[in-house]
Length: 125
Image 1 (tube, rainbow, N blue to C red):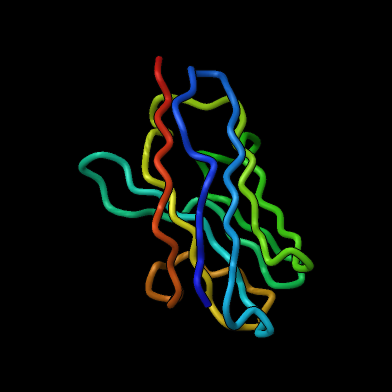
Image 2: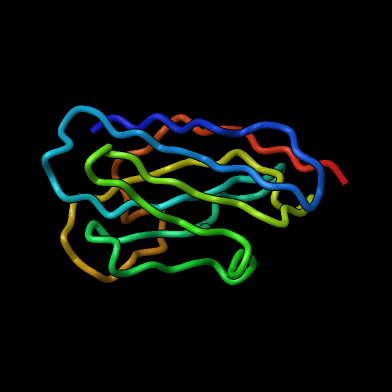
């Protein structure tokens, strides 16, 4: 499966952005989807994940209450709505996929074997 992330940009602190990740190719399989980010000089970290059914969702502690992950399987797209953005949210955001029907959302990078190219989010203070 190929993943295409979009929706990044420059936003002021307190603002909002919605990222999208469109899947193409072998979309008939069931995929758990995750969003990761990599800030300047930092390692890539988990942000949010959602099971194939959408029944299980997990957020990294620092984004709880501000970010919302969702998916539309009919459109093969997963979204990340980001509200109340902070300067520390500045990063390249990546979407990732793992072929599984498990309802347990995985947070480790090593568990995801398909990655998009990343989209840059810059939050100005």
